[in-house]
Image (cartoon, rainbow, N blue to C red; front, side, top):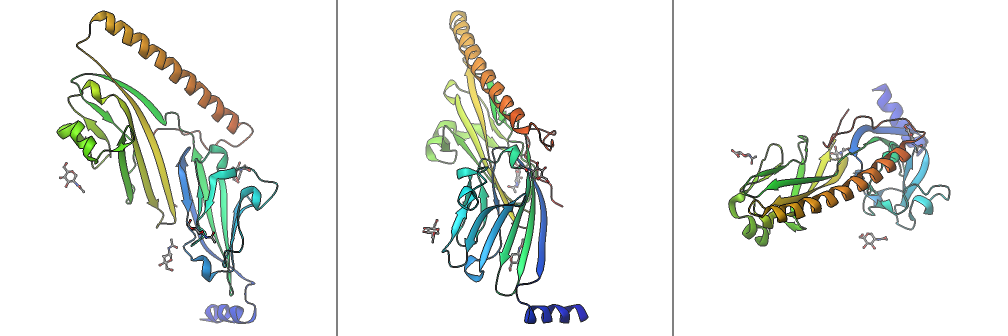
Length: 285
Ligand SMILES: *[C@@H]1O[C@H](CO)[C@@H](O)[C@H](O)[C@H]1NC(C)=O
Ligand SMILES: *[C@@H]1O[C@H](CO)[C@@H](O)[C@H](O)[C@H]1NC(C)=O
Ligand SMILES: *[C@@H]1O[C@H](CO)[C@@H](O)[C@H](O)[C@H]1NC(C)=O
Ligand SMILES: *[C@@H]1O[C@H](CO)[C@@H](O)[C@H](O)[C@H]1NC(C)=O
């Protein structure tokens, strides 16, 4: 009761002077994900909402929307995020697109209203991803399973695409008929009785809401799928093998580029990303 009274008195006599730490959350995401950190307030009821990354101001929005800025617009010294940051102007929630391992750190939210300053801290770890794009080849007539490596968070939406068509669309239904099976436990997609026309890009988009809806994560994974035609002559097969070898060379070259990029990003930093896997991982504390 005493503390309650003291609190009320503080509000009354010294508005805006004290700080309420409302929340502190910890989250791990995969490189390339798009991550939204929610304020859980409406901008119109606040004076100002500010976001900091490791103590550098990266976004500001005022209650009357007269000032909205992100990254270098807010602070001439930072160009870390460039056009990867966006602010939602109803709530001041912050989205970091295509998040990188170097974006690992502390994202602090400060909300100034008439009577208080509230703070919320998001501790974000970005894990390295060795295979955001997977290449798979299977013989005609066999079956294949694409595993997105979804972990079982309570609240997520998953969508599979074939060559950018959503696989509930009529065209996709027509193409696969009853050969598609979605495992509702693992989220993996199985195609049985593979046909040569099934070759193409399969993509899975996963949107997860975690930590009581204070964070959402959008993740995209791609499977490049090639069907090996079992009815071809050996000459044609040899041709395909050369083709596949060339593709593999390209993939290897691309992978080398990615690994190089990761190494360069991590140079001179702590190594929060030592644990890499193709799984989405979230940890809530
Ligand atoms: C707020 O966002 C909406 C939708 O993105 C946009 O149409 C509107 O112009 C924005 N308002 C301001 C003041 O920026
Ligand atoms: C941000 O802070 C975290 C934790 O203190 C640290 O691991 C990370 O290297 C920092 N990142 C930058 C770019 O300063
Ligand atoms: C998941 O699939 C099984 C069998 O495939 C089915 O019995 C069950 O009702 C499904 N659960 C949900 C939540 O769709
Ligand atoms: C968001 O705000 C609502 C209403 O003010 C509250 O019930 C809810 O618990 C809040 N959620 C979080 C994650 O703070």
